[in-house]
Amino acid sequence: MNNMLSRIRFLPVLGSAWVLAFGAVAKSDSVSQMEPPPKLPYGVAEVLKLSQAKVGEDVISSYIQNSGKVYNLGPSDIVYLKEQGVSERIVNQMLDQRKKLAEASAQASAAVAQSQPAYTYAGAPASAPTFAAPGPARLRGFPRWRPSMISTVVSRTG
Image 1 (tube, rainbow, N blue to C red):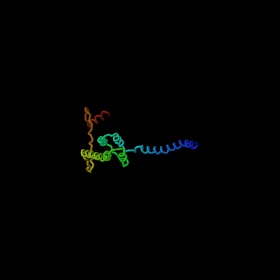
Image 2: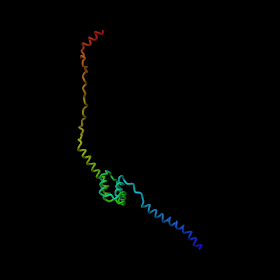
Image 3: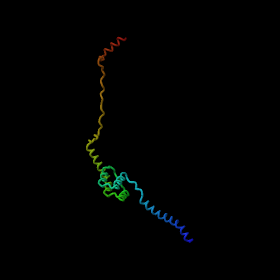
């Protein structure tokens, strides 16, 4: 009987150790499954959200084409998107987006270059403009100056 009582007293201690040991293993498994998502490049989280919401691939494809964003995907980003269920078609389109935007930009700049006239340097600088000095100002209603007028003014004052 005494032996039975010691076993009963030991049972809660054994149970607690069992819960702690196996609870920690179960907890570590759930933590590894609940890892936070990696820091995704700009714009990738929106595409992932659309894919997880089961939006059709054609809609996601149109979103990528019209977004005007360049998706800088690295190898770890591609693996993560694949694990999250994003289709290979969508990942490939995100990778091709940089090339498509570069081609569109090159076409636009070529069109602008064709529409603008080309200016070339002739070699010799243009001469500076020359200005002619204006003639003497004349007020209307007053007579023109004549040397005889000075002699008349001098003789009157003197």
